[in-house]
Length: 472
Image 1 (tube, rainbow, N blue to C red):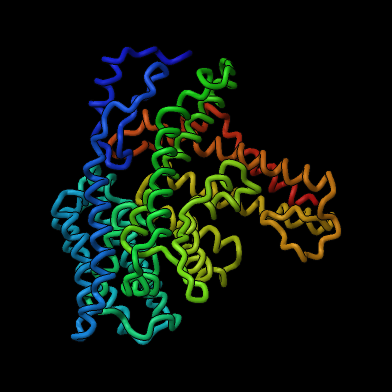
Image 2 (cartoon, rainbow, N blue to C red; image 1 turned 180 degrees about the vertical axis):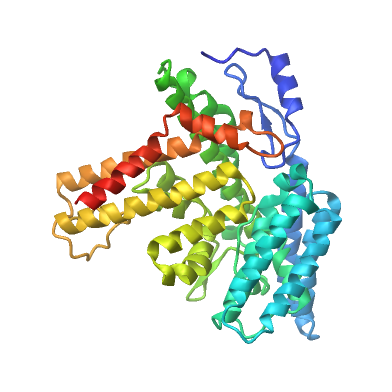
């Protein structure tokens, strides 16, 4: 059934009622007859965050003056950490006092493990951090508050864990001081929207790169992209059928059309946060690379085209959040690969689920992704060997040894798996309906209901692919 047409008065009341969501930022009326920005209650929050990032970048650039007196690095650590402190004071960060104390406790735990002459400090600290996060969610913080702040806590946890693993692997010669540690985990450019950056990249940012035209262009482009994705997620995707695309259906077809709308809306909400995180981290003076004395502000958090038009589900999971994908691969998968490829994949997706918090629907999606990507990978690897063709989950390099590279049936096979990936994305994304989410997140019964309405189709296809793999 088509959605009820709303008057402008109803539209304004709806927007006012849902106008306090930080992650949505601005509120756009989700009505087929009223695609217009009616309020922007999150603009002041976003403006303050961007202001703190810009001031932080300016301070880092000007901090070279203090280096003459031997205080440059000390001053920059204070400046980068103070930004997050001011943000918390201004109300940008919903960090209760008990959790702020936890940041100091996390440093003490990290330093304790760093002093142990062991090659497993990363593993021990990971367990300590996960236990602390679970206690925070279950006992320390009320569920509503935790649900709003768990993204920031996940980034802090990733930073602390990466420090311990870098010590194990010799990437860092010594554990940072408490000032360095707190300024790193509370770096104003990443503390709210992310993304994760390594301690080495953070220290590189302390040198204070000059604000240039390229820097401003990256900030402006990422911000514009974030707002475009927000409009698509809120105003267009929920009304694709039949208001924008005249496709009608009842029963099962209608449920799949609605699932596609929900999935696309969720995808673009992720792109919104991803581009916004690019904006804040670049404004704060990080997110660059250097090539032969040439500075490029080229950080990329997500690749929308690789998700909406994927080659495989493997490409989807790596393109969804590139910094987190690198973190999981470097610190989780490579540490667990000695257990075997499949156990390492399960450990990786389980770690990702735990970092996201005790959420049944996120855990179900992430673990399903683990099985789907593994089955797809081994199946396409087997088919590529049998037919000697470029049909692997990842694109083959130009100098690969496959005989069949550009045959029509090779393109057709890859197109089939691409369509299958879109099918899995629709099924998994159907859970993320904003209208069904409450302040504590989605309930387990909601997850089971949604997938039951779609007849558990993706899981059956995965099982069929696994059986086919063993038969060939």
